Length: 317
Figure (tube, rainbow, N blue to C red):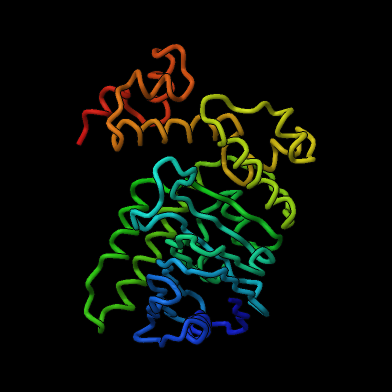
């Protein structure tokens, strides 16, 4: 199934999606018929400068959206794996994250069949976002994003404050008369929480990206996380990617906000936290499972990333 989206307001997407799956648009929402899959897609267009779309579905066939003639002044914030559907298998190497993309990097979205889509995408005019946050905010990375003059992508791991807002968006029961007002405020709150994370970065210079580099960086990330017991060396990842070590390290840090080793350790500790809380494994079981021979070192790294010692964390909640 492929949708070619030429409309400049997100509602064109809803109508095209509904047509393809044999459904209708009801109050900005399309329910997926059982023969095509399960779930829904819902869109909100607050004005021509800000819109939001919630995707919470799984289709039984491949699905692609091709965006044509989209305004170059628009920024896209795509929050992924953030709606708790309970369908992501334990141990799957995904975490709630958000991608920020500037002009030129949103030509097509392809979703393989039986892929759970649980995301919230927001499209906002760069000039409008500058109005919202004020001209007194002077941060190199934020300024670069708002200038929107080159193709860029940044990804941030979604933390608790963002997940709280997402839960409020998905579970809210708001009267129809106040619905747009409520969701517009929540959209702005999500963007604000994201900017709080971005201003902690210290990128002094950013480099324009192409689609090939971005695809390879995500393949490198997958390779990096294949075995959480032992990270591959930079030399191995450089050879795998076809990039020089310096280019790989520079672009990886730019996109993901952390060095390759820092990203690996952060993800590793997030998995450790999941094993402690959800699988109810002991601290020693988790440490050894993730490749630590020294449990004292494991406890130190865990505390640096999560904020508390693993023994303490396992007792909370």
